[in-house]
Amino acid sequence: MTTPHAFPTATLRALEPLGLPHPSRGYLCAMHVAILDNLDSFTFNLAHRLEPMVDRVTVVRNDDAHAMDILESGDVLIFSPGPGLPPDAGCLMEAVQRFVGRKPILGVCLGMQALGLHAGGTLYHAGPPQHGVARTIDQALVHSHLFANMSFPMEVGLYHSWAVEGIDEAVTARLSHGVAMAAEWPEIGAYAVQFHPESILTPAGDALLANWVARAREDAARLAGRA
Figure (cartoon, rainbow, N blue to C red):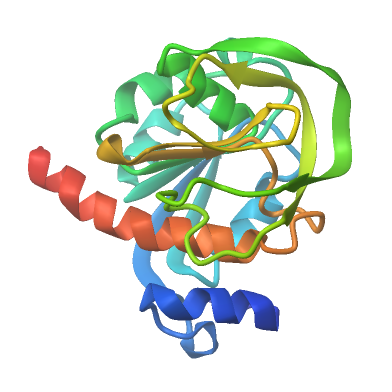
């Protein structure tokens, strides 16, 4: 079993409504999370945040010859941040094409952009690079699963130059000047954030990840029933 992570008090309060075991008693649910590493230094921080929440986390690079097989073994998937654009990120777009609608997915930063492209959106250069910049999300849509039971305004850490547009129906949170910060496609079990929940600049990141874990557990059972 993974050693319990020292969750902040505010995060523990956010976890209570989810009906999951308290992290001090071990992981939150028995689930294998496979993370596609898009060659980003934050990927293992993301894995570290998730380790107390599930019983297994596997990380595989997007240039690994066995990446697709390893992703297939996961109950749920995360597409990590990374440099560049999604079509240039190894097997990322192949993984999106294969697993969207089959397995629950969380896309982070570059991962959100990949899911946005798959959903028919386009990428645009979002002004000066936002690398290690804190910004505020004033509110999320009330039906959001990712932001359930969370408090606003919410500080988030940004590390991007590009953003996705043209997916308005899926967007559940934006910055004040309109840049999409989160998108959700609950019917196919796909969720995404442009910011980094694993960053110290996102104080409520653990709570958001726990929201996703809780939702992904439900989605995994539902999507498996379709197979």
